[in-house]
Length: 239
Image (cartoon, helix red, strand yellow):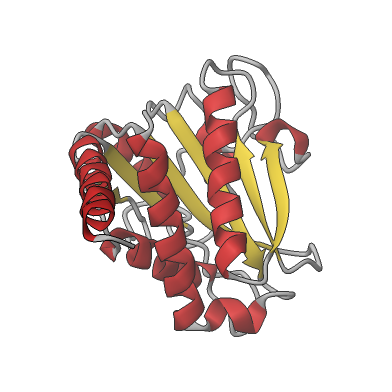
């Protein structure tokens, strides 16, 4: 390749990188790793998901990023356990305490992020896979589907995890938490009546049995976190 062409390509690359950095600096991102520690023998979903989130936050490019996590905060009920789809673990007030999930969403809303990404591990699926979940019935459903699909694909591209696509939270049939607007079963963290971020995605990364050893490996957590961050930054750059 001759020198003028090389210089031209380098200038294009630098211009693209500047665009990503400039655009990304305007965005706020809230990360919500699972706080569940009651997720199987010798396995803490909170630990594995936090490892993924910490890796994502440490990866370039630097964004205005915040982690909302209730683990260890005894002033909230279900701060280290509970389901994202159960009233008793989310909206309920027990002995004057709000839930760990409620605390996390309150903290996120205070920062006014444009993007909210929850990171969990699945269970009972017998699949070494990744699932993306979005909320049913709000104005950003289409955009969230695109973002979730890109993040799932990015994770699968750097691992041997199977791509199980993007699903609506109303399709899971889990527990009893419902969106006030649609009346359908929902994930509390993705409900637009609870979470003010316009772009909201929940990732179920691996299965706590089928992916047990894979998820416990810090190297894999790092690879996954970095892949999520890279694709998120690329998506933001296009906005």
